[in-house]
Image (cartoon, rainbow, N blue to C red; front, side, top):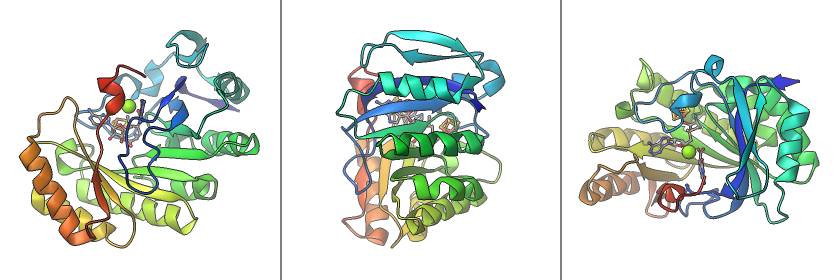
Length: 253
Ligand SMILES: C[S@@+](CC[C@H](N)C(=O)[O-])C[C@H]1O[C@@H](n2cnc3c(N)ncnc32)[C@H](O)[C@@H]1O
Ligand SMILES: Nc1nc2[nH]cc(C(=O)O)c2c(=O)[nH]1
Ligand code: SF4
Ligand SMILES: [Mg+2]
């Protein structure tokens, strides 16, 4: 089976903060898929959005060295599995599937998750969650899930409210299948408190929320705490946390 890959590397999970389901600070093997159907204004993986322009993928040759070798796309599933296995340092918490949007290549994602599970790893899915019908196909294979809620200011797609409702549905599907799932909201200085209240109403009783400032950070700490409070007042004080992209500060992948 073939898939369009971006990269495979070994690092620690830099996002997720301290809410249940987060793997922040855990060592992972990251598998980044090429291609995305959204277009977030601040996407830090912009070069992988258009899969047709990702002519080759790269895999780290030695764990945590940042030294890569390149292979043409589409990748063979077996070659991706080999790349994962050579990055197994024996202390890996889980294998993270990210992108781009991994669920867009659902058949390959499912086959890879099945294989990785059979090899004894847990699966961690990083998704925009906009396609719950696809998420459903891998929910039973997902141990952990970080599902984005795309704020209006992300300008990810035309009908942002419909997208939010689908993202929440994906979280429901994942939770019903037994995955440890949390929601991640990337916020900017323009994020409206009333929108955060709405996301919080949708998530209340379903999953915890981390609020992650867009990098590079431009939101004030005062505003960040205002949004935290809005969410917390609706969802409960134990169900909200902050998340920062710590890997970017420490210059790791
Ligand atoms: C590149 S996305 C890939 C997975 C999936 N497409 C998604 O958006 O959830 C991985 C994570 O990085 C976050 N992210 C991307 N660019 C960011 C930025 N400039 N600042 C903060 N978070 C960012 C996304 O919100 C998402 O949680
Ligand atoms: N260290 C590290 N942590 C991450 N958490 C989410 C990432 C992603 O791009 O999905 C990511 C990433 O690219 N690197
Ligand atoms: S959904 Fe994820 S990969 Fe796609 S544009 Fe947004 S942040 Fe980037
Ligand atoms: Mg990233």
